[in-house]
Image (cartoon, rainbow, N blue to C red):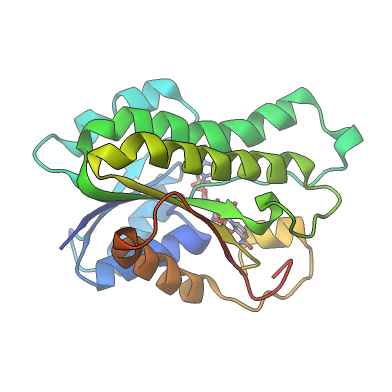
Length: 230
Ligand SMILES: NC(=O)c1ccc[n+]([C@@H]2O[C@H](COP(=O)([O-])OP(=O)(O)OC[C@H]3O[C@@H](n4cnc5c(N)ncnc54)[C@H](OP(=O)(O)O)[C@@H]3O)[C@@H](O)[C@H]2O)c1
């Protein structure tokens, strides 16, 4: 049984992935802002397998008190930085608040969280950052997604850099750049588009990768898409 912390677990891909981990018997700490949605998630699994923790990951104050909520008697085997936000707006209509918001949620929240819980990450642990095909170099790009894609591109380079610093401690870091998955966020990015992949299907891949890939793959930015946008 592994201890797994996953962010953005209140809906979409994170919700399905948290459930998948719990179904496999792992202990899951599920983070997001929406307490009611996390409670619903927790009730869907075996009692005690998913521990909901309501937190705004853009708040340094809330990250600072996270260890009090987790307790100190265990280590985290897998951290999945899945929480994300997307603003769909032509570049010239975006203001600096839009850019700050994208960077806060998609890049700086993982940075803050990893710093905040580093003490829980021991030899053999795996950090999986959830990037996007929009932030994968050379992929097709789409109007309205400059801030989102740039923030996800930064997350992928951050993942590569972090892996070099953590490898001596035996901590692996990878970034999965997802293609289209049928969620609220996808509808925001591509209204009306039907994705070839459901959250439960992507959850299966993310769970398998998080649990098994670290012995073979480290510091990699990996496209996970049938086509582009998805
Ligand atoms: N769906 C796709 O096609 C697709 C494609 C490529 C990449 N991705 C990436 O996959 C990840 C999951 O996407 P999704 O489609 O499942 O999105 P989603 O349904 O919109 O879910 C986003 C999750 O992030 C959480 N979140 C947002 N801001 C937060 C904050 N400040 N603090 C804590 N949690 C926060 C949300 O919870 P609360 O609102 O309750 O806080 C929610 O649980 C994202 O990183 C996204 O960029 C998705």
